[in-house]
Each structure stands twice: as C-alpha cells, then as structure tokens.
Amino acid sequence: MGTLKVMRYSFASLITNALTGNRNWKPVWREPEPKAFYDVVIVGGGGHGLATAHYLAKQHGITNVAVIDKSYIGSGNIGRNTTIVRSNYMLPGNEPFYEWSMKLWEGLEQDLNYNAMVSQRGVLNVFHSDGQRDAFVRRGNAMRLYGAGAELLDREGVRKLVPFVDFDNARFPVRGGLFQPRGGTVRHDAVAWGYARAADQRGVDIIQNCAATGFRIENGRVVGVETEKGFIGAKKVALSVAGSSSRVAQMAGMRLPIESHAVQAFVTEGIKPLIDTVITFGAGHFYCSQSDKGGLVLGGDIEGYNSYAQRGNLPVVEDVAEGGMALIPAIGRLRILRSWGGLLDMSMDGSPIIDETSIEGLYFNGAWCYGGFKATPAAGWCFAHLIATGQSHPFADAYRFDRFVSGRVIDEKGMGAQPNLH
Amino acid sequence: MRITCPYCGARAHEEFSYLGDATVKRPESIDEFSSKAWVDYVYLRDNPAGLHKELWHHSAGCHAWLEVTRNTVTHEIVAVDYAAKES
Image 1 (cartoon, rainbow over the protein chains, first blue to last red):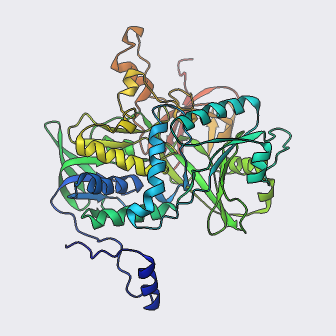
Image 2 (image 1 turned 120 degrees about the vertical axis):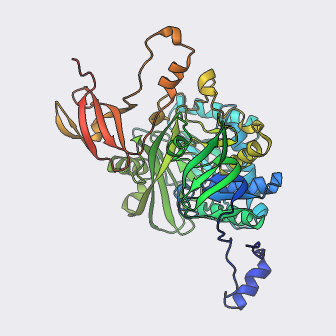
C-alpha cells in the first residue's frame, strides 16, 4: 500500500497531458483498506475532516491518520453549500477565526497545488433602512478592527456594483450596502478533492464507504472506532460530522446542544454574465451569486424544524423566490433547474464547537449551523491544532462546550437558545 | 407538510411556529439556577433521527400549542395532541 507517485499540477503537466490525449492522468488519491491502528482517526470525510487531516500532516507532522466516511468524498455538505466565503462577522469570538479562514482561502490553491477556483468577487449585503445601516456600520467597523476589510456603500456605490437591483422597491428600497471585497466564492467540491489529495500525498489514508458504527471506550478513554470495515484502533478519534453530530456523538454517550435542520439551495438555468459578486437581501433571507457555468446559485432560510432529510419543503422555495424577486426583478423569468438540501447542526447560540470531550482522546468539531463551508480551512487548522497539542487554538478558544455552562455564548444574531431562529 | 390541528383540521405547516423538543423538562426550582439541570433543559437535546415529539404553535390559526410526533427523516406525522393535556 505504498504512497501514490505524486503528480504535481503545473502548466507544463497540463500541456504534456493534453498532447498525450489525457491518457496519463493518475488517480488523485489512493483507496487503501484500513490499517489496524492509527494515531488519529477522523470520522467524517467532508471538507472539515479532510482539512483537519491535511493540517495534521502538514503543520504537525502527524501522518499516521485515517479519514473515514460513510459515503464518497464530496457527497455531504461540502458539495451541498452555496460556495460563499466571507469573514463579515462582528463578535470577538467569531471574527478573528473567520478572518483567519479567509487568509487561508487566499493561499489555499498554492498550499494544495490544486485549482479550487477561489474567486474574491466580493460579498455585498444591501440595507434598506437607517437602523439597518447603523447596524452594518458597526459590523463593518468590527471587521476593519480585525483587518477583514469592509466598505460602506451608498446607493450610488451599490448601483455601480449591481445596477439591476430594485433600488426603488416600494417596501424595501435599497439605501446602500456593506461590501467585503475579499469575500467571494470557491468551487466547493474542489476544496474536498484538493484537501483529500494533499492529505493523501502526506500518507493519510482516505477510506470511503466506511461508516462508523460505534466507539470503543475503555476507562474513560477512546481506543478506537467500530466501522463497517471492522474495528480500527486509534490513539485519538476526531469527530467532524456536522449535520449528523448528535447521531454520531450519541454512540459515545454524548448529548449535544444541537438540533439538526435542513437548508436548501437552488440553481437556475445558465445565463450570460449578470452578477459578478455575491449579493444578499437585507429585508428577507435571500442570497445569490453566479456560477462560472452561468447558473444563478440561490439560497435562503433553513426549514425551521428538526430534520434529517436531505431535502426541504415548498414554503422555503417560495420564500427564496419571493426574496429574489424583491431584490432582482430581472430574474423573474429564469427557471430553477435544480434544488437540493443539506443537513445542519444548528447549535443553541448559532456558533460552532471545536473542543475536547469528556472522553479522553475524543475530540469534537461541529455545530457549524449554515456557515461551515467558509470556515473549512480555519476549522481544519484549529481542529488539527487541538488534536495535536491538546490545547484550543487561540482563534477557536471561544468555541468550547463549557460556554453553555458559563453563559459565555456567542450569539451573533441575539436570538437566544432557539436554534431555528439563528 | 401538513399538520392536523385537533381544532382546525389539516393545515399547511406555514400556519404553525416551531418551538422544538417537547420532552425537555423545566427544573422545578430556581435554586438549581447554576446547576446541570438548567443547562440540560435550556441547551441539550436528544435530536433523534426518527420519531421526535415537538411543540408547534398554531400561530396563524387557533393559537393552540400542540405536541406533534413527527419522523425527522421522512417528515411523516404520526400523532398530534394538545400540549396541555390536563386542560
């Protein structure tokens, strides 16, 4: 089960392979059978789990690592989100973390030698009232304090960026916007593939179609994972299964401050270039960008009730369409080609958890609500740091279980312990 | 998804507001304010994949609080009952 011969992607490799009929491309990662024992077993081969494996190997030199997933790489939330990256948070517990994630996005393709189509096309949040403008000024200032960058745009500034929005909507006229130029989109499944390839090249075993079925815990310490492919021993086990965290953690006897909810996304038929940024509606829950294939990618609210179905219901479809029509009437005749749903860990304060657990050697990363994609690099970075050193990374120090006991919750939206309102 | 309100009949779920798990129990005493019981009640949930007892408010209807037993995987509703059964 030797390591795969590394193929480095470059302009020269592209030309060479094009001239030889593209017959010599190699598989991007190996498909090994699990070994009997690893230093670290990561449960969950989504973006976060794979990023964790990459940074464990690269930053901490821990390469005797397996990532196991119940399905194939890219089948879960990493391939189901709306690909938006941004660091426009406000609270001290959040903003340094998301800004670090943004910095990692900016260097991601060089780090992984993989084209993830990182596109810093900007993220624009429009506002519709004086009160909303004041709240955005405050948020923008918090972002600038942490070096994330933010620009407050007046109506004319917004008009230059997105002339097609309905500025004079009778109910919600557009008064301006908060713009983060460094935000944008990233090809989501390429993130999974890039991290998987990079981790594999450093010796990490990626084991697909291998669901965890239980944990072996002896004297308060985890000693391995029961899987569909047999028992895998491990010094440390790391859970990275957002959407299914409660189900998986229950196998270790844990009860979490999480409800699972579903959120939908939509893609329209392809059209010529129209929207060259990411735009969000301030008066409802609607956000939109245009993919490189030309389809508009739309998203909105979560369904609002506990769900483990990877699909949504019609009221949210209607709500997203209404939000879209209120903001960009020009999209009214576009047909929606596809819609799909993903599962979210909605936490009680709307913020994530990266922490050790009460079981020695068992670590937890989850509760990402609807914001896990943008966090992928920093979550992997901070989770790897925690697993390797036993200490919370300073950027993730607020993301701990004990905040629900101490009262130091991170409630970015100020909604209280009501997951469907975050 | 349609919820059959015992007062109003089968209505679309947009008429209802969702509160969440109906099985959590509020601790009896405020003396327990800093204790584990309150953390459990406010924050921790079983979050099952399968049958889930949950509270819905018929907010755009008769304003009754209902305890709905629903399958979180299939969205099938197997029972709807009044939340305050003694009244």
